[in-house]
Structure formats: C-alpha cells, structure tokens
Length: 251
Image 1 (tube, helix red, strand yellow):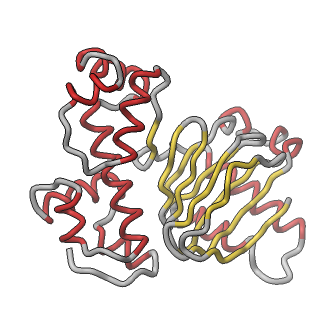
Image 2 (cartoon, rainbow, N blue to C red):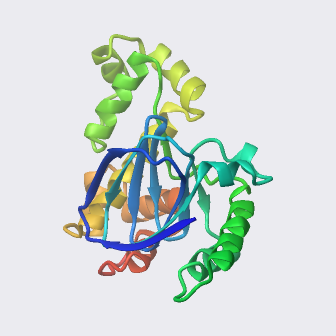
Image 3 (cartoon, rainbow, N blue to C red):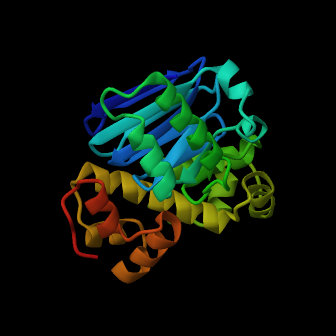
C-alpha cells in the first residue's frame, strides 16, 4: 500500500497519466476535476474518486487542494471481496466512516498492517452506490460528442439545440435521442450540469461573485442558480466555497 499527502495550489494541472495501482483520491479541502475517457467528475471535499489500475486520467485543481491518495497494488485489489464491483472509475459520497478511515491512514507512525486494514475497510465503503451527480458523461456518437464539446467550450452559450445540432451535422431530434441513450441524461439535464461544472471552476478561480456568475451562465436569478447548484453539488455555492477554503460570498 502507498499513501501520499500533498498540497496543490489552485490551477495545478496533472496531465493525462496512468498508475499500475488502483487509486483513491480524496481532497480534505478544495475542489478538483478528474477527467478520464469516460467523462469528467467534479470532486468537492464531500466526495472521493476511485480509479482502477491502468485508467488514463488527468486532474485539475480548481482551488487550493489538500490531497490524500491511497494506491492499492492490483494484486492486493484482486484479493478483496469487493474487487468485482471496483473495476471502473466513479465518484462516491464520503460519509463519516470513510472520511475517518482515509484520514486515519495518514496518522504519523502508522504501522503498515494498520494502514492495510484501514485501506481494506475503505474498499468495503467504496462498494456502496456511486454518486453520479457531479459526473459529466461524454457521448460516444461523433455528432452528439461535438455538441457536448461546444457546450463545454462555452457553457454560457444559450444557442438553441437546433443550431448546435446543425453545426454538428445532425438534427435536433437525433441529438435529443442520442444524449439519454449514451449519457443517461437528457440534453437539458446535461447542459445544466455543464453550467454547474463551469460555475464550480469559476468559483474556484475566485475572480467572480455568485450574482455575476448566475447572470453569466444564463440563470434567471441568483435563487434559481443556487437551487440548480444545490441539486447537483449537494450544497449551495457559498457552502462549497467555505468548505473549499475560498472566500465566502453571499448566495
């Protein structure tokens, strides 16, 4: 077992790379974005991301991060009873037991056997249902993927679906069908989630207010923005900023 604790300043980018070991990433403070070929995840302090061995991924720090990483050799993972359920990447909500287990593994002068037992317990906790609320699944079909890329490049763009579909060489009806088939989200839900991801990144940069952000992203009011944000992130923008050690801003 390998455990690492590092501080990463806001804006740090860890480019695409792979590990031979499985990896559990947890930020005790700060928000990060993890990207794999499967899609993108926002990972605030209340969540952790699981990456099986050999999964190509990149990590972007959207705020100052206190990172905790558990690396589990593939042979050790294969021996764990929950291994069959841990063969793909996902984000999980970090409950009190999992949080305490992760942090306990980093106590000074830990015996290797104690660390191994804590990691084993953490794997049992990971086998609970994943939290997909902060996941941005990417469509596979080239036309739908092109629409998704246009939205991610400019989440505040309010162009109608018909225009986006035209630029991607498809009909609005085709894109409407492809998004739920390939992402399990309707086009409207996917676009809303993209805007919230953009909001998290902007809040992490610390150069805009919540009111300005709500307006920039096309929300009708700060209240509507706060409601959409809470639905996806499980907290208000102010709460996320506070937990991420960012300057608080009134909702």
